[in-house]
Length: 527
Ligand code: NOJ
Image 1 (cartoon, rainbow, N blue to C red):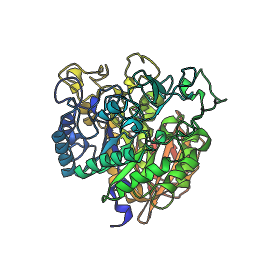
Image 2: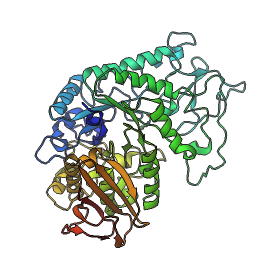
Image 3: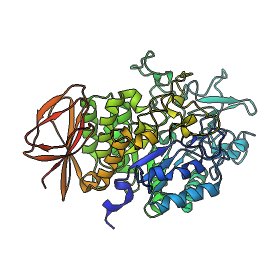
Image 4: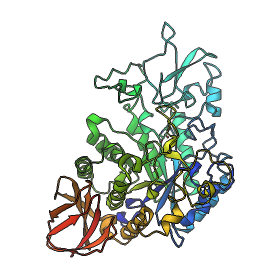
């Protein structure tokens, strides 16, 4: 098998936020049986999207302080979501359809209700004490350092029982595991093997930047002079030089990659963030230091960049340039932590964005609901960290509660559901869902889109344009980021329009091209 035929080199991944996908048990919360019931929508059914892989948000037993990113048992399924046998059934049915399954792996922290932490907090000297990060208060009783939790406040919580602080880079209910302790690393690699042995095809690895920190000696993070309290949350008042991205990050990631390597055809995608001041270096480090044949970092620039041709052209070109050989780029435009794509850029641009995402090389990741143009739920964001607006239930049809549940949904369904739902959009030739399906179909039939090289060219400041070229096929992609019509010369004599975001007759392109406002267009060139 050539390396280009590994499934993960061009797989389109679909992120399922299980709580909000489909509720088969009528308790108002989505579950694994619900995912099984909706597999036809994803792959193998008559009207499927035809995606290649799903990434399932955490479904492990959890007090749900962070909706499953606080795990109290790494080897089971939370009763709210099903049982291990439901998971096995899901895996089997997905595999029968040729659908790969990635699960979320949360190595940096457990729940404070995990038995390991319960033992750890009991006394200063117990076999699990060093599985978490415990330190004495300063002389005045204050926390050991000024480190901040991503979710607000100090990253240290005083535990009265033993008079020491424990570190939590996220919520106080998510104590950080001590990855410097080899026993912890061994235990977490066992967890990886547990799921890989069950047959999962890959892992999405959470919050890897916090695995390594400077613990010995502890030092305060310096203030960030660029911090702007009006636009940034307090977490960014510090430069996190000591509390994350420590010297061992890549060592630990390599250890994880070794586990992945020991199974055939498995892959891991890490949730790694870049610093504004060294983006390219951070990515290059990853691909150089961790085996790129089994792992890749998410590229989140598509979520953070403003929707302008310049910023997208810049980050895509910079990023593509630093990739080598078999490095897999992993692009995404949305996820369960960030405001919805259509809310950020608007519904018209969301069509252009679909063409972008599905014509880029590597592994594009679609956040469930973005293919319908879902926008943020209108509930009030209770606080800065409230991420419920982007997590509202998936609207399946125009039945009560959008067909998501026959109970009371855990979050309100979108009031738009009578029109904005999967069933209606499936039947509608000009819907966003239909555009996604056409793009997936095009991609699956195109060697150039799946494995061809990416070569950018410039036609207009408001247009992102690139070739995708394989030995047998050459395509040109044009994306009009503006809301005006653009007529431009093209760098080829002749081409055939293959797909447009707009309902119009496709024609031949000779020397010039007119792009409608927000139009995304794929053109086939003679090979
Ligand atoms: C990143 C996850 O995407 C987010 O939802 C979670 O809260 C944090 N990591 C902490 O696990």
